[in-house]
Length: 358
Image (cartoon, rainbow, N blue to C red; front, side):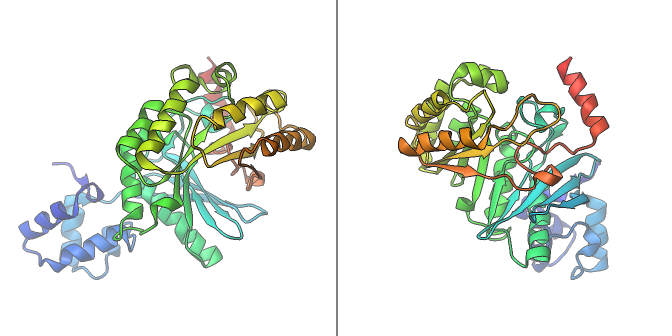
């Protein structure tokens, strides 16, 4: 019989196994702490277990985990890590330091299927979903970096890395359950934000599940024509269905909603665009609109607007009482900023782009 991942079993199930091999009850708590609090990445590291028990665990279970493949540090202190999965895939995560926060930006999929026209990950093939314990490992490894470099624990987690979190729904929610559990990382739900390109059906499901974390919506255009052009998901999840889903989500959860809006030169940065954004904002109980400066990528046609156009856009929103904030990107020099994560291997990425375009 093939071995199974020990972290896919509940505490009760592991307890039943230990009882079946005659181990004392206190061993269960020791093992559980190694899996979720002490973060052992192999059974031999579980130093307070007997050698015989460690061998039994190795023969019965696997303990697949992420490892750090490469790491880059930006001039602004941002750290981008490329993680390697047990089956050889690569996925990226980012540690973002600011004066008040240490934020982990984590991925939920290896690649992405949504093909947004401005995002480096969108030009990659989606290889597979990350499992809940792989997502958990991302947070653990980024937290270890935070402690090592900045002598502080993570304060926030954003699911804004590679992939669409709501297309890996069960694993993302289970990862968050472990991240927030007292016998996990013990982080508060309100310090976690899940970002979506707008999968309306799953936003409603978040409402039904009455989640406690915050929701961010990648809007980037405020009419269907423009949104269809840059975000193909809008063809099956138009703005009306998205607005309806967000209102349902808020009614069920009262959780905070934020809009993300990247400014593209001569595409969505006019005052007419700002007026359309204002109209969408007023149809949803959103707390904030993050206006994001665009980070150019090799395969996209978009450019960053001038400072003058950006300022005029912001002034219009302010004048019309839209709670908007201009968010400066961090980690641009190491391709760690918003929309730049792509496991940057130029030859591989170009091959994937060619296949997607075809």
